[in-house]
Length: 206
Image 1 (cartoon, one colour):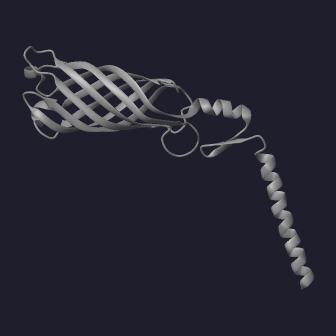
Image 2 (tube, helix red, strand yellow; image 1 turned 135 degrees about the horizontal axis):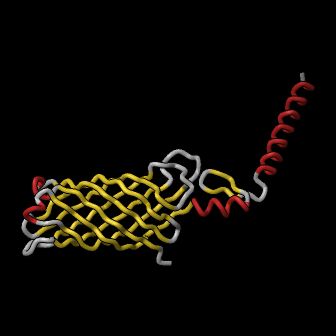
Image 3 (cartoon, helix red, strand yellow; image 1 turned 180 degrees about the vertical axis):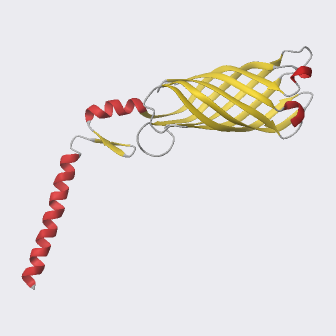
């Protein structure tokens, strides 16, 4: 019985040793990055598609067509967008390849005279439909923005905007996005609800 125990222990030690050697062999000169090991050559390629960024400022053009545009006009103007956090992970793992948390501020002027400007502000998130597109361009996404809408004649109201869009270009140092959605204000819904769209360019400062 003693001999059997000793043999069993030796077999177990041998298996552990072999497993350790195999693991070392498998991951020699490899780097672990977001759920996978990469060789030096593959790591260079992977880093093109796996990265994150924080606080990317940006600017763009926005358009808003409220329900009562025949009386208060169509609004358009400057959009200032800050990407607070952007994560890009293109691999076979489940989940979106791109997701972003951002803030957006819009100052919009009416095409009608004597109509005050509208100030739109929101906190938003967007997520890509694909998990592994392995490309830098034309990546569709969906999202949601929640914030406020202010205008002299109608006061201030909470608004939320379900949205969809396309990352026209999405690289590590900059991104160009086209977004569209429908604004749902809590107050003055019949007048101020309407279609919204913007085109924004964001970039890394450093």
